[in-house]
Length: 113
Length: 118
Image (cartoon, each protein chain N blue to C red):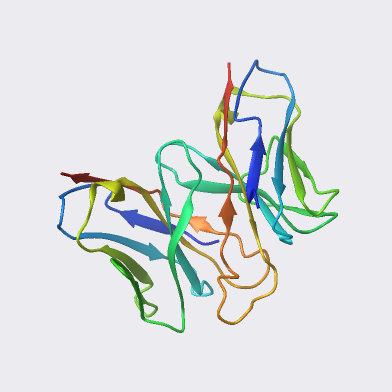
């Protein structure tokens, strides 16, 4: 089955700096890669996703890059703000069958004001 | 729309007791999932359903059962709770059909149920 590894487990940045979180996956059949943000006491919420036919996608301060050959994808947050502080999860899924997500172990991002 | 709701929000069980967690969605989604979240391990799939009346096992199904009698509801049961089932449980749902230009792959998560088994 799929295995997703995520690094780092914790990340502390100063407000206004950029943050980068990296994930690798093992199953070449995976072709959908979402990123979820989880705030304390809440369920994960999708912030951006990318499909395997695209190498990069951007949404305001958030961007995701995908390298299918190397089987890794990354989340980039620019101009970080204190409200970006949360736990971020990457995930991978094929778009067939059950389409369930395999999650990374999470990154706790702390943005220092 | 309320989205995905979960009942109860918190529960404490003693070893050997049973309980049912209820997940409800009002988005007419075909796919529904149950995950558990443990510290440092992300979310792991317990069971899932691709439509009313169908269920299947995920990565960590042992000790759990599920039922999907109505399209909008997905129930997770623990027949004999064990301390290893102490966790936060999340339900999620998604569309089946892929629509160009939409986020049809997106899984919508409920707020979670924190279960403690003593």
